[in-house]
Structure formats: structure tokens, C-alpha cells
Amino acid sequence: MQDFSDKVSISEESVACEENIGFKINQRVHFIGDSRRTGIVKYVGHVEGYPGMWVGVDWDNGEGKHDGSINGVRYFQAKGEKSASCVRPRNLSGGITFLEALELRYRGDSTKEEEDEMYVLSARNKRVAIQLVGKNKVQDKLSRFEELLGASLSYLGVSSTGPPGQINTVVPNLKELDLTGNLLSYWQDVGVICEELPALEALNLSNNYMVKQITGLPLLKSIRILVLNCCGITWAQVELLKQSLPAVEELHLMGNNLREIMPLSSNFVEGFDSLRFLNLEDNCIDSWTEILKLSQLRSLEQLHLNKNNLNCIFYPDYDLCLDLHIGQEMIEKGFRPFENLRCLLLGGNKIEDQTSVDSLNSFPNLMDIRLSENPIADPGKGGLPRFSLIARLAKVEILNGSEVSPRERKESEIRYVRFVMTKMQGNTEEIKKLHPRFMQLKELHGIEDEKQSAVAGGPQKMAAGLLSLTLKCVGASIGEKPPLTKKLPATTTVGKLKILCESIFKLKSFKLKLFLQEEGSPMPLLLDDEMNSLIELGAGNESTILIDVDD
Image 1 (cartoon, one colour):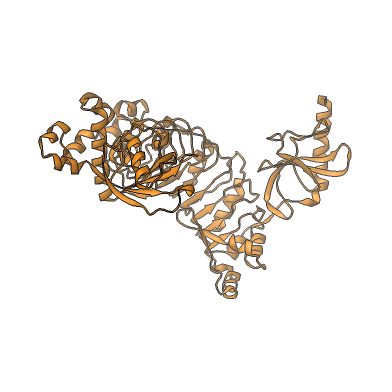
Image 2: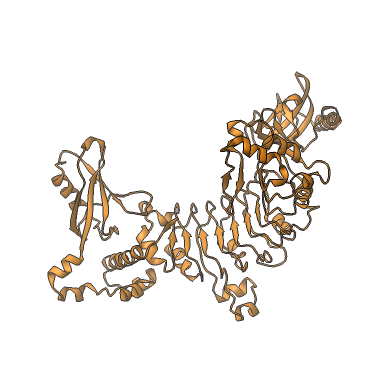
């Protein structure tokens, strides 16, 4: 067991060795020959039992050999059990300057892999490759850096800015800059780069592990797009950054393990007057009340919350607005939470209640919604099929990335009304409670109750209840059989449909399993309850029944 005096002596040795080796504790480094393998120096000095000097590195990707302890001696504490390793100093690089990286990327002989990395950021933070057709001409143009408008210096080991004033002299017109995966850690360096690039509008600092203290950052008047994905940033830092970003329109904060949104001086986020797009995907937010703290961002149009841990959604009513201290005066002036929000992406969360879906109707201008990969949107787990989601969401124009056409909306709403009528069997109070739009849609499409319809001609009622379905064999052991389109009563059960398929395709020797496939749905729905009818399953006109063999 190592005692306290041993730890002190190791720490003192580490400090003494820093100057001799050229690496310092907490310095960002990458492995020589692999600039994507980045980490932070945790120890510099000797390792018992091994000759020479060593540098202990805690790797960003967590792929190491130990936790900072070797043969029972602890040299440092790594973040994971096997996230660290000790490396010879000659195998590590402390990085290069901004301009050295620029020379390396655009004036050196590029490999195919490096050419693939030559891209600039689009307005939506997507990579747009620099065309290398007529490569010599392109390289000639790029060699004149003053003409360069966009540059990608990702994973080149940039760790410093270099001599003052040189960046502006070399690339004075740069508008888009990608510094993903470098060795930057101090906000002062970011400030210097931005000050020397007065035309810079889009900056990507993803996968740079920045220090907690935000100091030395000037007013960045021209920055409109800032990408800080996987930087270990907290919301407290975002609040401090806000003061330097008066014109920011897009802010990307993916993969930062954010759990809370903590405004500085009130219960909701203020400022960000120009912010239209906020990306909080792949974080750890599990409470919708945290998201409500963003409800006063007046310019916010797009909010991405995919891959968090949210289990419900609700729109704040009048009393809740007062509880959140949004303010009586603002409410009286007609302010509504999320009043300009048009796009809300909620895929990959844990939402499972229909009330959450219905609450989306209360957002004043919401028309683009993603609910995929939530229990509520997975019919196989008791969730709602696409047609039901469309019918419940009165204003949605894009659902799960797919456009909702006027025809699809009309068909979905009619199917939904008939589905509810069949399931609820006239229980009016229960229908109002569970299906808020039912009565409105029933009246809109002129759908009569079943009892009233019975008075009308039998053939007319029968025709209205027929569904056109395509039966398609997909099982390999079934063999090749042409698909067949049949008109079937909507009340046909899964059990009767199986018998029909056995007869039509001569499959009585097989045990069948059926799937319902509909346009716009990512996965076919297994029909495993033989008592369910087609209408109860939400099958609609022109749906496809896939026929497979149950092994």
C-alpha cells in the first residue's frame, strides 16, 4: 500500500521533470502519428521498474491500459479503470500553431484521407467538401490564403495561436473555421483567433476539452454559428459565453453530459436575442422543467433534444408561467412560451404517454416534430402508429423527418376516428378524455356514428368499411410468389387474415406470421394478436401485409 509520503514525492518529482521533458501537467497532447488519439498529461517522471522518463496520459477516448496505478504504485488518478497509459516523451506531441496547421493542410502534399477532411461548415453545421476537381488549380488558389473563405483544420494538433497579428495577415477573409479535435483548451486562445479573423461567422470547436474558467474572451460580434459538441462544457459556462456572443444564431452543444440548465439571475434563460437554433442532442436532461427554462428565448425556432432522457412533455399554462416567474407584465402583453418555435426534435427519449403528444398542439407555431425511438411512437411496444400521431397533432407538417401531405393528413384523421369509434364503442366521456381531437375530426370529415350508418344502405356501408391491402410473401422458404391486392372488411381479424393467406398462396403447411407495413413507418408492425381486427390495428387503405414463416 502506498502511503501519503510516497504520493508527495511522486508529485514533487513530476513537477521537477516537467521542464526537462517539455510536457506539463494538464497539457493537451496527441500521440505521434495519430492526431486523433488525444489526451491530457497527468504525470511526468520515472516509473518504478522501467528505465528512463515517462509521461502519464489520460486518453480522451478512454482506451488505455490502467487508471494511473502501475504495479501497486499510484502515479495519478485517471477518469477510468483503463483510460490511461504511460508513454515515452518522444511518442507525444504538444501540438502546433494555427498557421502551421494551415500550411500543413492546404500547402502540403495531401493524402486521400486528408482530402476527405477538407470541408467547410454549412449553415446547419453539415460538412461540405471542398471540390478537388482540377486539383492543381484548387491548390494554387488555396496557396493564396488571403482568398480562403473556409478552412478545416480538424485533428491537426492545433494548440496555440502563434505570434500576434499573423493570423489576420495570412487569412484576413476567413468566414468559416473548423477546429474539431485539436488541442486547444484556453478560451484566451479562442478569443485571439476570433479577434484576428473579423469576418469569421462560423466556428467549430467540437472535441476540444476547454478549461472551466472563461477569461480573456472579447466581444465576438460576427460569430453567428458556434459548435461546442463534446467539449465538456456546462450551462454555467454557456451563460458566461453568452455575454461575448451578441449575434449568435446557432449554438450546438451535443454530447456534453448536460443535466441541468442553470440561468444566472432568474428561473429562465435570458439574452440570446438572435438565437434561432439550439442543439442539445445526446445529453442527459431528464426533466422537462429544465427545457421550460428556454421558453423565453423569443427568436428560438429550432430546438433539438434527441437522445436525452425526457419522459414527458407539457406546455406551461398561465399558473405555471407565474410559478416560473416569467412575469405578469409579459403575460399581459401577449407573450407565449416558445412562441416562435417551429421545430422540436425529441427522438430517442423515454416519452410514453399520449398526453405528452397532445400537449404539442399548445405550442403556437410548432409544425416539425420528431418522436421516433420513443415508446409512444413504437406500435410494437404499445405506442401510437404514424396515422394516429398525425391525427392527434393538428399542425404538424413534418413528422419524424417525413412530410405530411394533405392527402396523408385526411386519410390519417379518418382512420383515427374510425379506429376510436371501434375501440371505445360510444363511451363519450372516456373518448373526450383520451382523444381530445376526436369530436372535432368526426365533425370535420362528416363521419356518422355506426348506429346511424346502419340505417343507410347495406352495400354503401360495406364499401365504406373495405380496405385495399397488398399481400406480399417475404419468407425465403415460401418461395417466389407475386403480390396480390385484395379488398377486405376492416373488421377482418389477424386470425382470419392468416387463414386467407394460407388459402390464397397455398401455405397450409407453414406456420405464418404477418406484419403490417405502411408508408412513413420505419419498421413493419408484427401482428401477433389473432383477435385484433385490421381497424383496431390502424390498418389503412393501400397498406401492405408482409407474410413470413414463423420458424
